[in-house]
Amino acid sequence: MTKPDPSLLQDVVAAKVLDAMKVASAALRAAGIPRIAAGMHLLFGRTRPWRPMPSPVIHRALCPALAAAVIVAAGWRPVVLRAETGPINVEQSTLTVFVYKSGLFSAFADNHIIKAPIARGSISEVAPLSVEVTVHSADLRALDPNLAPDRRADVQARMISAEVLDVAKFPDITFTSTAIEPAGTDRWTVTGKLTIHGQTRSIAFPVARVNGRYRGEVAIKQRDFGIEPIRIAGGAVKVKDEMKVQFEIAR
Image (cartoon, rainbow, N blue to C red; front, top):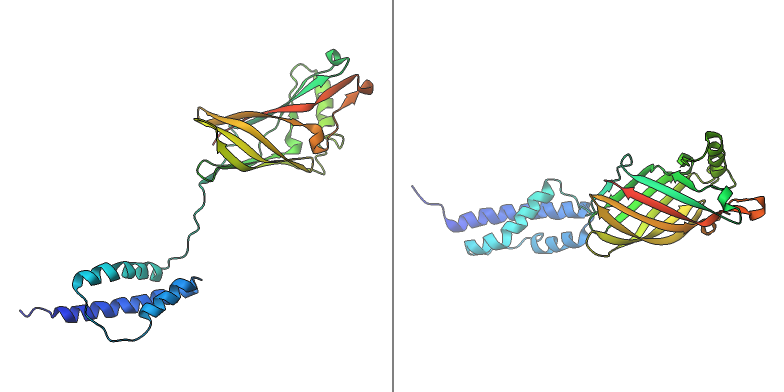
């Protein structure tokens, strides 16, 4: 049986590779990558005599190109790599606001505990680290276990009214991180933009991961967001400007 001529096989392989590279060049142009396409056209798009090369050289030089051509011809498109961002488990996450009393007759006033259910959010645990949280203002609920039901209802009504949150005009409270820096094992410093009552301010606070959940707290001032702390009896009874927000975020 006659053995095939090696030089003839090289010519056949080379011709197939050149055809594939021309197809790849056209596909790259269509995909919006003109520089690569132009380079491939310069290398493989013109007709010229084939000069046989040793088989190992062909293997090293053309096999990667052939593989690229096959991928492109099969429908490859550019892929943009993104961080692995996933949704927050809103059912397992908590956000609680503590508002404290002050004033001359603060003994006759009440501290307030406000539940702020998270409506939606996302978190990325790989670089670049990020977190976003949205709370619907109208969903905030005054818990105040020491208050009678009628007084608790009054606190609730006042909180969502135009006097405080004005939920009809400002329906959402949002936080979006702008930087998250490591601060030790399972600890970070989070900086971001908090929007309440239509006002946006930059805040920073520490976060720790405990049992797979992200926990922390931050102090904010109502006046920073255009909210005047409630006063009663000419200011003899009032709530403090500063509030404390505690959170636990679950994936």
